[in-house]
Amino acid sequence: MGETSMRVTVWGENIHDRTDERVRAIYPQGMHETIAGALREALGPGATVRTATLDQPDHGLTDAVLESTDVLTWWGHAGHHLVSDEVVANVQRRVLSGMGLLVLHSGHLSRPFVRLMGTSCSLRWREADDREVVWTVNPGHPIAAGIPQAFVIPQQEMYGEYFDIPQPDELVLISSFSGGEVFRSGCCFMRGSGRIFYFSPGHEHFPVYDHPIVQRIIANGVRWAAASARTHYVTTQCFESPTGWFEHLGAER
Ligand code: ZN
Image 1 (cartoon, rainbow, N blue to C red):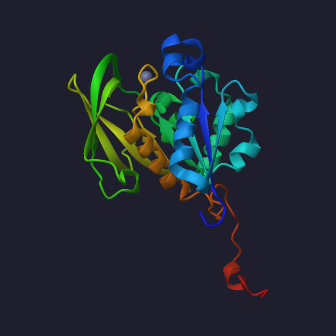
Image 2: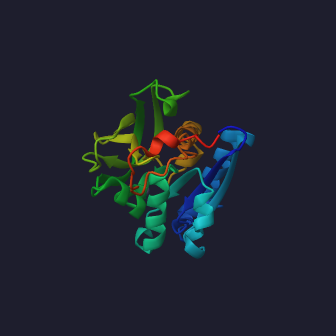
Image 3: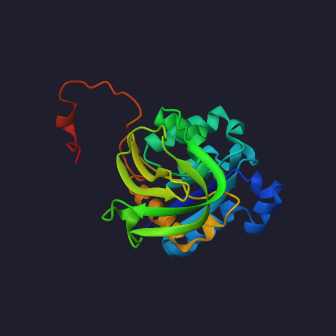
């Protein structure tokens, strides 16, 4: 990112985290603070990491915050419908302009993700303490750096196929579950100038975000998604193009 540091905003819906005793016991400060803390440790002084939550004005995602965010991470579940049209539109516009977006777990049904995918993003699920094995199927990908070929998350909600997403531009991880299902658990998409990474592990009733390999994948995802964030191209509007306009580029010098 050159001499300026990577600017990360960790967004948490922060509903279960406050209202569900099981979740409070695992994540006393909320999942967003656990994720932000892990990112600060992994990314070090090269990154500034802040948090934002649903209950703040503009859900903590004002124009000023979004304009100064290189990568936004998103965890939501119970309050997808409470996210305002304006914030959804602004997140989409920023992604198309180059902001990276990490969508975590139940964020598969978040309004920004569904809008950016254009499909239902529905899936098969079961909350029954399944064991999840996460398999790296693209070991040369930057998000797989330092990640073993397979690792176990002892307890997880099962997310299984069919997952109604567009074909991922890059598939990095798939998961299998003790109940037999499989799932595309680490998927990369390009939208406009922006990079999107969907990563499914992270059910609120299990300490998944304390898992060191899960933390590493999220940090790798942030680094990968940040690569497009400082684009200088305006890609989101049409320009009239007079004949020969480019022949004068740089002529002022
Ligand atoms: Zn869940």
